[in-house]
Amino acid sequence: LLTSARRMGLEPLPAAAHLPLAQAAAYRAAGLMLEEALSVSAHQAAQGLASAAVRLNVVGAVAVQGLLRTLRPALERAAAAPAPGTPLSSFAPLSDIAMLRPRADRLFVT
Image (tube, rainbow, N blue to C red; front, side):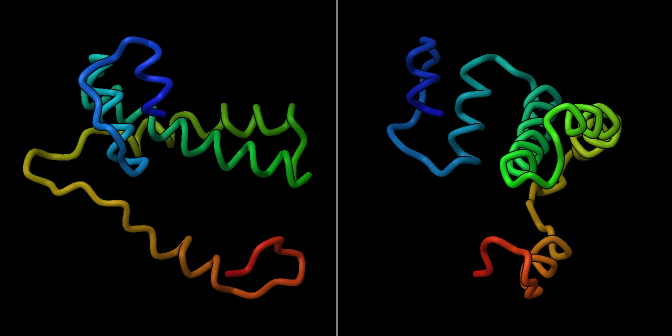
């Protein structure tokens, strides 16, 4: 992400960073406001999961586009800017617990 942002001429950027920090730096360098950056991040997260589902043949490429379109309002609500003073977090216990459940059809269980 940082390499791509540098190629686009976006500066200043850190030399290296974990994904959330790299995203924040790239979004800020691109001039995105908080609501726009949150919306892009929400879309990217959903798109990443959708892409994985297609690669694993869980859903077809055309069907996943319909699912993403259906999810758009929920993504926008989830990406709404937090109230001033609210600390940002990525706490998602239900998805973490779901990933711990063993299943024979799961590709990776770690």
